[in-house]
Image (cartoon, rainbow, N blue to C red; front, side, top):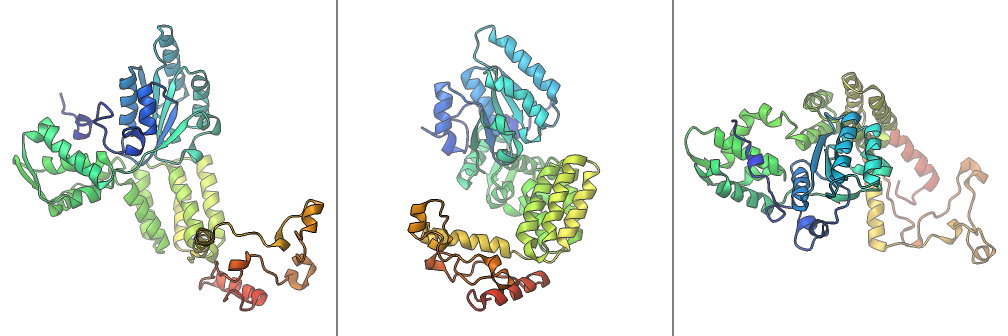
Length: 425
Protein backbone atom coordinates (compact mmCIF):
# COMPACT_ATOMS: atom_id res chain seq x y z
CA UNK A 1 0.00 0.00 0.00
CA UNK A 2 1.39 3.39 -1.06
CA UNK A 3 2.29 5.80 1.71
CA UNK A 4 -0.03 8.81 2.04
CA UNK A 5 1.50 12.24 1.37
CA UNK A 6 2.70 14.11 4.45
CA UNK A 7 -0.13 16.66 4.13
CA UNK A 8 -2.69 13.85 4.40
CA UNK A 9 -0.91 12.13 7.27
CA UNK A 10 -0.94 15.36 9.29
CA UNK A 11 -4.50 16.42 8.47
CA UNK A 12 -6.06 17.56 11.80
CA UNK A 13 -8.95 15.55 13.24
CA UNK A 14 -10.25 18.14 15.73
CA UNK A 15 -10.46 21.90 16.22
CA UNK A 16 -7.78 21.70 18.91
CA UNK A 17 -5.35 20.28 16.34
CA UNK A 18 -6.36 22.79 13.67
CA UNK A 19 -3.66 25.38 12.90
CA UNK A 20 -4.54 28.96 11.90
CA UNK A 21 -7.86 30.78 11.41
CA UNK A 22 -8.06 31.75 15.08
CA UNK A 23 -10.48 34.54 14.15
CA UNK A 24 -12.94 31.78 13.19
CA UNK A 25 -12.12 28.71 15.28
CA UNK A 26 -10.04 30.01 18.18
CA UNK A 27 -11.46 29.96 21.70
CA UNK A 28 -14.84 31.79 21.74
CA UNK A 29 -14.59 32.60 17.98
CA UNK A 30 -17.89 32.75 16.11
CA UNK A 31 -17.55 29.62 13.94
CA UNK A 32 -16.17 27.53 16.80
CA UNK A 33 -19.18 28.47 18.94
CA UNK A 34 -21.52 27.38 16.13
CA UNK A 35 -19.71 24.07 15.75
CA UNK A 36 -19.67 23.34 19.48
CA UNK A 37 -23.34 24.26 19.85
CA UNK A 38 -24.32 21.99 16.98
CA UNK A 39 -26.09 24.83 15.13
CA UNK A 40 -24.20 24.76 11.85
CA UNK A 41 -25.40 27.06 9.08
CA UNK A 42 -24.79 26.34 5.43
CA UNK A 43 -21.61 28.19 4.65
CA UNK A 44 -19.05 29.23 2.06
CA UNK A 45 -15.40 28.99 3.13
CA UNK A 46 -13.51 31.57 1.08
CA UNK A 47 -9.72 31.69 1.12
CA UNK A 48 -6.50 30.89 -0.74
CA UNK A 49 -5.32 27.30 -1.31
CA UNK A 50 -3.91 25.28 1.56
CA UNK A 51 -5.44 27.19 4.48
CA UNK A 52 -7.65 24.34 5.72
CA UNK A 53 -11.04 24.68 4.02
CA UNK A 54 -11.48 20.95 3.32
CA UNK A 55 -10.02 20.01 6.70
CA UNK A 56 -12.43 22.31 8.50
CA UNK A 57 -15.41 20.77 6.68
CA UNK A 58 -14.25 17.29 7.71
CA UNK A 59 -13.77 18.34 11.33
CA UNK A 60 -17.28 19.82 11.46
CA UNK A 61 -18.83 16.58 10.19
CA UNK A 62 -16.78 14.42 12.58
CA UNK A 63 -17.45 16.58 15.62
CA UNK A 64 -21.19 16.65 14.86
CA UNK A 65 -21.21 12.94 13.89
CA UNK A 66 -22.97 13.77 10.64
CA UNK A 67 -22.81 11.91 7.36
CA UNK A 68 -20.36 13.61 5.02
CA UNK A 69 -20.71 13.77 1.25
CA UNK A 70 -18.01 15.38 -0.86
CA UNK A 71 -18.20 16.54 -4.47
CA UNK A 72 -15.66 18.35 -6.60
CA UNK A 73 -17.01 21.05 -8.88
CA UNK A 74 -14.40 20.04 -11.47
CA UNK A 75 -15.63 16.48 -11.94
CA UNK A 76 -19.27 16.53 -10.72
CA UNK A 77 -22.39 17.42 -12.67
CA UNK A 78 -26.04 18.10 -11.89
CA UNK A 79 -26.72 14.35 -11.90
CA UNK A 80 -24.10 13.78 -9.17
CA UNK A 81 -25.60 16.56 -7.07
CA UNK A 82 -29.12 15.13 -7.36
CA UNK A 83 -27.97 11.60 -6.53
CA UNK A 84 -26.15 12.85 -3.44
CA UNK A 85 -29.20 14.84 -2.30
CA UNK A 86 -31.35 11.71 -2.76
CA UNK A 87 -28.98 9.76 -0.50
CA UNK A 88 -29.22 12.53 2.07
CA UNK A 89 -33.03 12.36 1.99
CA UNK A 90 -32.94 8.63 2.73
CA UNK A 91 -30.75 9.13 5.78
CA UNK A 92 -33.33 11.50 7.32
CA UNK A 93 -35.75 8.63 7.82
CA UNK A 94 -33.48 7.32 10.57
CA UNK A 95 -33.75 10.59 12.56
CA UNK A 96 -30.12 11.43 12.04
CA UNK A 97 -28.88 15.01 11.78
CA UNK A 98 -28.90 16.27 8.22
CA UNK A 99 -25.71 15.35 6.36
CA UNK A 100 -23.02 17.78 5.31
CA UNK A 101 -22.52 18.22 1.59
CA UNK A 102 -19.04 19.57 0.91
CA UNK A 103 -18.39 21.02 -2.53
CA UNK A 104 -14.79 21.85 -3.32
CA UNK A 105 -14.17 24.73 -5.74
CA UNK A 106 -17.85 25.64 -5.76
CA UNK A 107 -17.01 28.71 -7.88
CA UNK A 108 -16.58 26.32 -10.82
CA UNK A 109 -20.17 25.10 -10.60
CA UNK A 110 -22.42 26.42 -13.36
CA UNK A 111 -25.66 28.27 -12.58
CA UNK A 112 -27.65 25.09 -13.32
CA UNK A 113 -25.48 23.07 -10.93
CA UNK A 114 -25.87 25.68 -8.20
CA UNK A 115 -29.63 25.87 -8.83
CA UNK A 116 -29.84 22.11 -8.22
CA UNK A 117 -28.58 22.69 -4.66
CA UNK A 118 -31.12 25.36 -3.71
CA UNK A 119 -34.08 23.19 -2.73
CA UNK A 120 -32.02 20.85 -0.56
CA UNK A 121 -30.38 23.76 1.27
CA UNK A 122 -33.71 25.57 1.75
CA UNK A 123 -35.45 22.48 3.17
CA UNK A 124 -32.53 21.51 5.38
CA UNK A 125 -31.97 18.20 3.61
CA UNK A 126 -28.26 18.99 3.65
CA UNK A 127 -26.02 21.54 5.28
CA UNK A 128 -23.91 22.91 2.46
CA UNK A 129 -20.24 23.74 2.95
CA UNK A 130 -18.72 25.19 -0.19
CA UNK A 131 -15.00 25.93 -0.57
CA UNK A 132 -13.75 28.59 -2.95
CA UNK A 133 -10.62 30.56 -3.72
CA UNK A 134 -12.69 33.17 -5.56
CA UNK A 135 -14.92 35.95 -4.26
CA UNK A 136 -18.29 34.21 -3.77
CA UNK A 137 -20.12 37.45 -4.57
CA UNK A 138 -19.02 36.99 -8.18
CA UNK A 139 -19.17 33.22 -8.50
CA UNK A 140 -22.06 31.97 -6.34
CA UNK A 141 -25.64 32.73 -7.45
CA UNK A 142 -27.47 35.19 -5.19
CA UNK A 143 -30.27 32.83 -4.03
CA UNK A 144 -27.71 30.28 -2.83
CA UNK A 145 -25.34 32.87 -1.38
CA UNK A 146 -28.18 34.46 0.62
CA UNK A 147 -28.77 31.09 2.33
CA UNK A 148 -25.13 30.68 3.33
CA UNK A 149 -22.85 32.32 5.85
CA UNK A 150 -19.55 33.40 4.24
CA UNK A 151 -16.41 32.84 6.32
CA UNK A 152 -13.10 34.28 5.11
CA UNK A 153 -10.00 32.16 5.74
CA UNK A 154 -6.56 33.78 5.70
CA UNK A 155 -3.11 32.64 4.61
CA UNK A 156 -1.18 31.14 7.52
CA UNK A 157 1.05 33.47 9.51
CA UNK A 158 4.72 32.77 10.26
CA UNK A 159 3.80 31.50 13.74
CA UNK A 160 1.28 29.07 12.22
CA UNK A 161 3.85 27.76 9.74
CA UNK A 162 6.38 27.30 12.53
CA UNK A 163 3.83 25.33 14.55
CA UNK A 164 3.04 23.17 11.52
CA UNK A 165 6.75 22.53 10.88
CA UNK A 166 7.32 21.54 14.51
CA UNK A 167 4.31 19.23 14.46
CA UNK A 168 5.50 17.51 11.28
CA UNK A 169 8.95 16.82 12.74
CA UNK A 170 7.65 15.66 16.12
CA UNK A 171 4.49 13.73 15.24
CA UNK A 172 4.89 12.22 11.77
CA UNK A 173 6.10 8.62 12.03
CA UNK A 174 8.07 8.81 8.78
CA UNK A 175 9.93 12.01 9.64
CA UNK A 176 10.64 10.83 13.20
CA UNK A 177 12.68 7.96 11.79
CA UNK A 178 15.13 10.46 10.29
CA UNK A 179 17.46 12.91 12.02
CA UNK A 180 16.20 16.20 10.61
CA UNK A 181 17.73 19.50 11.65
CA UNK A 182 16.13 22.73 10.44
CA UNK A 183 19.09 25.08 10.39
CA UNK A 184 17.21 27.77 8.42
CA UNK A 185 13.50 28.04 7.78
CA UNK A 186 13.14 31.32 5.84
CA UNK A 187 13.03 29.63 2.41
CA UNK A 188 10.54 27.03 3.63
CA UNK A 189 8.16 29.73 4.80
CA UNK A 190 8.77 32.06 1.86
CA UNK A 191 8.04 29.44 -0.78
CA UNK A 192 5.02 28.15 1.10
CA UNK A 193 3.34 31.55 0.85
CA UNK A 194 1.10 30.89 3.84
CA UNK A 195 -0.14 27.61 2.34
CA UNK A 196 0.00 24.69 4.79
CA UNK A 197 -0.19 22.02 2.10
CA UNK A 198 2.59 23.69 0.13
CA UNK A 199 4.84 23.84 3.20
CA UNK A 200 4.35 20.14 3.92
CA UNK A 201 4.92 19.28 0.25
CA UNK A 202 8.21 21.19 0.29
CA UNK A 203 9.33 19.48 3.51
CA UNK A 204 8.49 16.10 1.99
CA UNK A 205 10.31 16.95 -1.24
CA UNK A 206 13.45 18.05 0.63
CA UNK A 207 13.43 14.97 2.88
CA UNK A 208 12.82 12.53 0.02
CA UNK A 209 15.65 14.03 -2.00
CA UNK A 210 18.15 12.86 0.61
CA UNK A 211 19.62 9.36 0.46
CA UNK A 212 20.59 9.44 4.15
CA UNK A 213 18.58 9.67 7.35
CA UNK A 214 20.59 12.64 8.58
CA UNK A 215 19.20 15.76 6.92
CA UNK A 216 20.02 19.42 7.50
CA UNK A 217 17.55 21.87 5.99
CA UNK A 218 19.01 25.20 4.85
CA UNK A 219 17.67 27.99 2.66
CA UNK A 220 20.07 27.11 -0.15
CA UNK A 221 19.10 23.43 -0.04
CA UNK A 222 15.40 24.25 -0.26
CA UNK A 223 15.93 26.66 -3.18
CA UNK A 224 18.12 24.17 -5.08
CA UNK A 225 15.70 21.26 -4.67
CA UNK A 226 12.69 23.34 -5.67
CA UNK A 227 14.45 24.55 -8.80
CA UNK A 228 15.29 20.98 -9.75
CA UNK A 229 11.70 19.83 -9.14
CA UNK A 230 9.82 22.90 -10.37
CA UNK A 231 7.60 20.94 -12.81
CA UNK A 232 6.47 18.51 -10.10
CA UNK A 233 6.10 21.31 -7.58
CA UNK A 234 3.84 23.37 -9.84
CA UNK A 235 1.89 20.65 -11.65
CA UNK A 236 -1.26 21.03 -9.55
CA UNK A 237 -1.17 24.82 -9.36
CA UNK A 238 0.96 25.01 -6.21
CA UNK A 239 2.45 28.29 -7.49
CA UNK A 240 -0.97 29.74 -8.39
CA UNK A 241 -0.32 33.17 -6.90
CA UNK A 242 3.29 33.39 -8.07
CA UNK A 243 2.34 32.72 -11.68
CA UNK A 244 -0.64 35.08 -11.81
CA UNK A 245 1.67 37.71 -10.29
CA UNK A 246 4.27 37.09 -13.02
CA UNK A 247 1.51 37.27 -15.66
CA UNK A 248 0.16 40.62 -14.41
CA UNK A 249 3.63 42.13 -13.99
CA UNK A 250 4.66 41.02 -17.50
CA UNK A 251 1.65 42.80 -19.02
CA UNK A 252 2.19 45.87 -16.85
CA UNK A 253 5.84 45.86 -17.92
CA UNK A 254 4.96 45.73 -21.64
CA UNK A 255 6.34 42.25 -22.40
CA UNK A 256 3.88 40.29 -24.61
CA UNK A 257 6.26 37.31 -24.86
CA UNK A 258 6.38 36.79 -21.11
CA UNK A 259 2.63 37.48 -20.85
CA UNK A 260 1.67 34.64 -23.22
CA UNK A 261 4.21 32.30 -21.60
CA UNK A 262 2.73 32.76 -18.12
CA UNK A 263 -0.76 32.57 -19.63
CA UNK A 264 0.12 29.21 -21.16
CA UNK A 265 1.55 28.02 -17.82
CA UNK A 266 -1.73 28.83 -16.09
CA UNK A 267 -3.88 27.21 -18.77
CA UNK A 268 -1.69 24.10 -18.88
CA UNK A 269 -2.01 23.84 -15.10
CA UNK A 270 -5.81 23.88 -15.31
CA UNK A 271 -6.37 27.42 -14.03
CA UNK A 272 -9.95 28.69 -14.17
CA UNK A 273 -10.19 30.79 -17.36
CA UNK A 274 -12.77 33.07 -15.74
CA UNK A 275 -10.24 33.92 -13.04
CA UNK A 276 -7.68 34.89 -15.69
CA UNK A 277 -10.22 36.92 -17.70
CA UNK A 278 -11.38 38.75 -14.58
CA UNK A 279 -7.80 39.73 -13.72
CA UNK A 280 -7.37 41.10 -17.25
CA UNK A 281 -10.42 43.34 -16.78
CA UNK A 282 -8.96 44.69 -13.53
CA UNK A 283 -5.55 45.21 -15.14
CA UNK A 284 -7.07 47.05 -18.12
CA UNK A 285 -8.51 49.67 -15.75
CA UNK A 286 -5.66 49.76 -13.24
CA UNK A 287 -2.56 49.66 -15.44
CA UNK A 288 -3.60 50.68 -18.97
CA UNK A 289 -6.41 52.97 -17.93
CA UNK A 290 -6.90 56.27 -19.71
CA UNK A 291 -3.75 55.83 -21.80
CA UNK A 292 -5.92 53.52 -23.94
CA UNK A 293 -9.60 53.52 -22.92
CA UNK A 294 -10.30 50.77 -25.48
CA UNK A 295 -8.31 48.37 -23.31
CA UNK A 296 -11.16 48.02 -20.82
CA UNK A 297 -13.60 47.36 -23.68
CA UNK A 298 -11.25 44.70 -25.06
CA UNK A 299 -10.82 43.03 -21.66
CA UNK A 300 -14.55 43.06 -20.93
CA UNK A 301 -15.27 41.60 -24.37
CA UNK A 302 -12.68 38.91 -23.66
CA UNK A 303 -14.43 38.10 -20.37
CA UNK A 304 -17.83 37.79 -22.11
CA UNK A 305 -16.40 35.72 -24.96
CA UNK A 306 -14.72 33.28 -22.56
CA UNK A 307 -18.11 32.58 -20.97
CA UNK A 308 -19.59 31.81 -24.40
CA UNK A 309 -16.70 29.87 -25.94
CA UNK A 310 -14.92 28.09 -23.08
CA UNK A 311 -11.80 26.02 -23.67
CA UNK A 312 -9.77 25.07 -25.60
CA UNK A 313 -10.56 27.89 -28.09
CA UNK A 314 -10.77 30.37 -25.22
CA UNK A 315 -6.98 30.32 -25.03
CA UNK A 316 -6.83 32.29 -28.31
CA UNK A 317 -9.13 35.01 -26.96
CA UNK A 318 -7.10 35.27 -23.76
CA UNK A 319 -3.86 35.42 -25.75
CA UNK A 320 -5.17 38.24 -27.96
CA UNK A 321 -6.31 40.24 -24.95
CA UNK A 322 -3.06 39.68 -23.01
CA UNK A 323 -0.95 40.77 -25.99
CA UNK A 324 -3.16 43.83 -26.61
CA UNK A 325 -2.86 44.96 -22.99
CA UNK A 326 0.88 44.26 -22.86
CA UNK A 327 1.53 46.34 -25.98
CA UNK A 328 -0.75 49.23 -24.96
CA UNK A 329 0.45 52.50 -23.48
CA UNK A 330 0.20 52.41 -19.70
CA UNK A 331 -1.34 54.72 -17.10
CA UNK A 332 -2.44 54.15 -13.52
CA UNK A 333 -3.90 57.66 -13.12
CA UNK A 334 -7.46 56.39 -12.48
CA UNK A 335 -6.11 53.96 -9.85
CA UNK A 336 -4.10 56.74 -8.19
CA UNK A 337 -7.05 59.15 -8.29
CA UNK A 338 -9.50 56.87 -6.47
CA UNK A 339 -6.84 56.04 -3.86
CA UNK A 340 -6.26 59.76 -3.23
CA UNK A 341 -10.01 60.30 -2.94
CA UNK A 342 -10.21 57.57 -0.30
CA UNK A 343 -7.31 59.24 1.53
CA UNK A 344 -9.17 62.57 1.60
CA UNK A 345 -12.23 60.88 3.10
CA UNK A 346 -10.04 59.23 5.71
CA UNK A 347 -8.39 62.58 6.55
CA UNK A 348 -11.50 64.77 6.68
CA UNK A 349 -14.43 62.39 7.12
CA UNK A 350 -17.75 63.04 5.39
CA UNK A 351 -17.45 66.67 4.30
CA UNK A 352 -20.76 68.44 3.56
CA UNK A 353 -22.00 68.72 -0.02
CA UNK A 354 -21.85 72.39 -1.18
CA UNK A 355 -25.32 73.97 -1.10
CA UNK A 356 -25.43 74.75 -4.81
CA UNK A 357 -24.92 71.04 -5.63
CA UNK A 358 -27.62 69.71 -3.32
CA UNK A 359 -30.91 68.32 -4.56
CA UNK A 360 -33.94 70.46 -3.63
CA UNK A 361 -37.12 68.37 -3.97
CA UNK A 362 -39.04 70.28 -1.26
CA UNK A 363 -39.98 73.93 -0.66
CA UNK A 364 -38.09 73.97 2.65
CA UNK A 365 -34.92 72.77 0.99
CA UNK A 366 -35.20 75.52 -1.62
CA UNK A 367 -35.69 78.09 1.14
CA UNK A 368 -32.57 76.79 2.83
CA UNK A 369 -30.60 77.48 -0.34
CA UNK A 370 -30.32 73.96 -1.71
CA UNK A 371 -29.48 74.14 -5.41
CA UNK A 372 -29.21 77.94 -5.44
CA UNK A 373 -26.43 79.36 -7.64
CA UNK A 374 -25.88 76.06 -9.43
CA UNK A 375 -24.74 76.69 -13.02
CA UNK A 376 -26.14 74.29 -15.62
CA UNK A 377 -23.05 73.54 -17.75
CA UNK A 378 -24.93 73.12 -21.02
CA UNK A 379 -26.28 76.65 -20.75
CA UNK A 380 -22.78 78.11 -21.04
CA UNK A 381 -20.31 78.50 -23.88
CA UNK A 382 -18.41 75.30 -24.58
CA UNK A 383 -20.78 73.45 -22.22
CA UNK A 384 -18.64 74.52 -19.27
CA UNK A 385 -19.23 76.80 -16.29
CA UNK A 386 -16.52 77.60 -13.72
CA UNK A 387 -17.83 76.59 -10.29
CA UNK A 388 -16.78 74.50 -7.29
CA UNK A 389 -17.77 70.83 -7.15
CA UNK A 390 -15.66 69.66 -4.21
CA UNK A 391 -16.42 70.42 -0.55
CA UNK A 392 -15.12 73.82 0.61
CA UNK A 393 -12.31 72.35 2.71
CA UNK A 394 -10.67 70.58 -0.25
CA UNK A 395 -12.07 72.66 -3.14
CA UNK A 396 -8.69 73.07 -4.88
CA UNK A 397 -7.42 69.53 -4.28
CA UNK A 398 -6.06 67.68 -7.33
CA UNK A 399 -6.93 63.97 -7.25
CA UNK A 400 -6.64 63.06 -10.92
CA UNK A 401 -3.32 63.90 -12.59
CA UNK A 402 -3.04 63.09 -16.32
CA UNK A 403 0.07 61.09 -17.15
CA UNK A 404 2.42 61.57 -20.07
CA UNK A 405 0.82 59.61 -22.91
CA UNK A 406 -0.95 60.86 -26.02
CA UNK A 407 -4.47 60.14 -24.75
CA UNK A 408 -3.99 61.90 -21.43
CA UNK A 409 -2.03 64.81 -22.87
CA UNK A 410 -5.18 65.72 -24.80
CA UNK A 411 -7.17 65.33 -21.56
CA UNK A 412 -4.67 67.61 -19.80
CA UNK A 413 -5.08 70.29 -22.49
CA UNK A 414 -8.87 70.17 -22.10
CA UNK A 415 -8.66 70.45 -18.31
CA UNK A 416 -6.25 73.40 -18.56
CA UNK A 417 -8.65 75.18 -20.93
CA UNK A 418 -11.49 74.65 -18.43
CA UNK A 419 -9.85 75.12 -15.06
CA UNK A 420 -6.84 77.29 -15.91
CA UNK A 421 -4.53 76.85 -12.89
CA UNK A 422 -7.12 75.82 -10.30
CA UNK A 423 -6.05 72.20 -10.14
CA UNK A 424 -2.45 72.61 -11.18
CA UNK A 425 -2.90 71.15 -14.63
